[in-house]
Image (cartoon, rainbow, N blue to C red):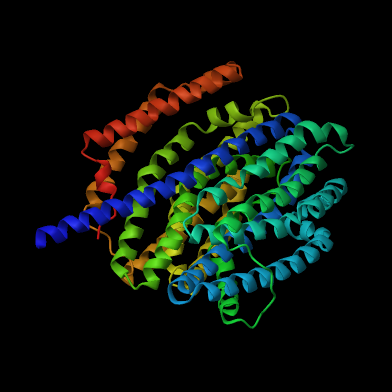
Length: 526
């Protein structure tokens, strides 16, 4: 009987691991498609618009609704809505679930619509507060205001997209929500190629591309919701128990899941006082850091949140802890080589992707500095994606808020200190250090409360990853000649970048295998 019980436990372990790996892979692949199109989009923007007053104005204008989207819609809403939805699925009938979805959707839509109207009207104030350096150039401030008034409604549309995605993810339908961001990149690419040449101020085309993308993304989600039988029928009810619970959880969640995004917004604020181009350099370097973070970090966070919420709803604390352990191991396994790759290949990547026409070698150099600074915090960003759901899935929003405030204060203080010796790169470094500090606080709390109890084998696993990372770094640093990059054309740069990524990856994986790490070691254990 004991043998049979152990065999059944192994089967459950393998099946659950396969399910999570499959879901993470689906979200990761879809996200990778979106991110690759995002690079195409940014390459075209760099080629058509370069780096200057107009692009700085657009990036600030776009960052505001994009920041609010991450702050309010994707971040706070997902972390407050999904755990309550899991409870409704576990404890209530289908009719109660439908009523909860209908009334949450209507209440959320009305709230965000009012916020969108206010934001559009108050666009000049937003620009004054978040990019005060633009006031020194009246034309730039006015352009940024006009751009913001066009893109601000994107917040309303993308909130509906995030709501639909949360419903689909909670029902383990991950593909459609993960693929939806592709349409933002497609619309902006189309606007850059076909609309921009027709406009008096070409950069305005990007703003209209964002607006149209919001509408398209909403429509793309509808068929999946209809098939699931959960297309929301918008009803406003602030007094519904479930809606009230979500709203109460959302207020602290707005801050707890978005500390890094707040720090990035503060980076733009400080950068607006620096040399023209500083905002753009930070933007392009952040885009490269977001690539691995989006593929693995967002994929894991998307998949693990409903899984943890379900474990908590069924009071399976061991499975809860082991799921966190699995996520953290996967993060370290992928995050370390990604960090090394971004540090060593910073300028080759930027040169390959963006150094065309208006984007100069000087821009590559300065953007490379901030990319390396952001890369130092990549593991911290990754860990936050996994550790925050460890709290929010248990409907504990206060702890991440408290630690987030401390981490943001640390980052803000470091901004003031590091901006003088390192300019825009100092801002990126401050954000990275703040993220590492935030992740350390979250991990310490989960360990002290014994919510997360690490499984055996961590020290050996860390040693294996460290050795593989050292081998990869030594290979790239010793043989790679960065100085040659500027002498090649675009095709040669792309071919050599691909070559060195493959070589670095091969050395990393081969070293892991030699030191004894196997895929079976990453199974969730019970």
